[in-house]
Picture 1 (cartoon, one colour):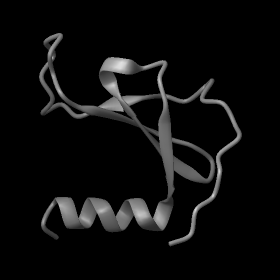
Picture 2 (picture 1 turned 45 degrees about the vertical axis):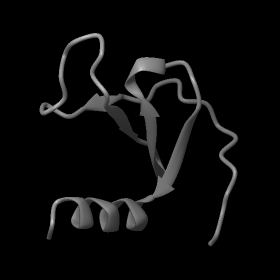
Picture 3 (picture 1 turned 135 degrees about the vertical axis):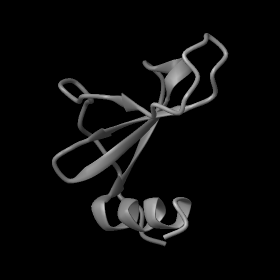
Picture 4 (picture 1 turned 90 degrees about the vertical axis):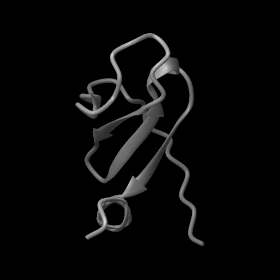
Length: 69
């Protein structure tokens, strides 16, 4: 497994949440934001907390798997 540390901030990223997510305060979901070289993922309940980033090809593979494509 290749790991790359992300040293940049998340200022200026436009975070999005699935329309299938609950809008209540107890909704368990993640938010994603497209960066220049990666897709950033965070817990929607802890927006200022930690997040991780994955490269575009890995994100595309995940989405294809999750959607059953």
